[in-house]
Length: 370
Ligand code: SF4
Ligand code: SF4
Image (cartoon, rainbow, N blue to C red; front, side, top):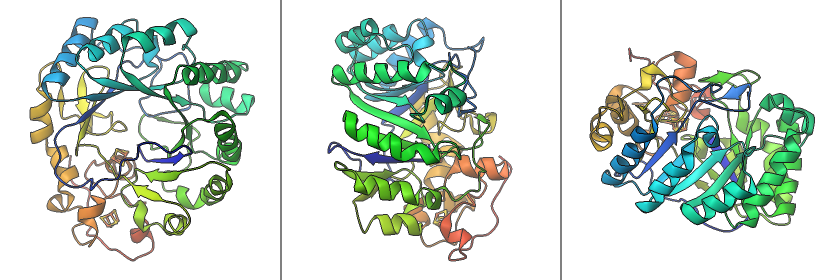
């Protein structure tokens, strides 16, 4: 994801040299396309379950194979993961092998009973609840949900927090959510939520109402960063956007608060498994051009080591991406999902890079057949 995490409470941060060779450490697993909301923006274009989603035995087999591949942590997302009938069994099987989970959910199904069971039987470390807005009408419109849906999800976040899970909310940055972001930050501070994650939508999946892919979102977010800095409690900012250290707004922000550039982990230490078992390096690239295997037939470790697109992510300059830029070994050649959204090629150019926009970097035109 092209994310920024505004962290309010001191805790774990992921500073590391993210372009250095690394083993496969983590999966992101979208367990179903089924969802009880109908958001205009959805990176997996979820609504109904697909007919070829992994069955319950296949899902448990994937847990075993992830364990064999040395994975200790899986991000569980969807669709809405708790629509899937066997999700608690999957999470319990992960726990039985010492594999922790981090959950991305719309929060609408998180009852007291379910959360008690999850606390007792799983190794869930955190929940990231898709909130987007604290205005009931905006929330209902964005989520395709009923007018009282926001009140329900706010109660669910309280329940998550009461049970001691790390509590994060996320916001997709759009023209409609941007003005309400200060109110989301204020509520996060008041409630003691750990983090507000900002997603910059990418035109893969469903993108109704998303700002144009080429928009300079970080400049638009300047006033939101100012508000974050004025909160009575705040810690640091993490960015997961490859070229973020070169953006002037983040450079100015880094003079006022710790900014940790975490970069892009897709294909570098993480793979994504889609509901039908297809494997993509990046969670925003659930598109055939980015499939590098399928867990029904392929070994996770072999895919990670040998897939062409993983090599593109690790050695972009060897594939003609940003080969002339002096920062390519620290940046990684931009965001592959944005490049796909802009050019239609997963090895195309991420034209949103601020150095390219300002003419401070030039690259040979990329965009090879993929
Ligand atoms: S390619 Fe990397 S930076 Fe781009 S959306 Fe995927 S994980 Fe995020
Ligand atoms: S030109 Fe490419 S490698 Fe250089 S900073 Fe921009 S996206 Fe990164």
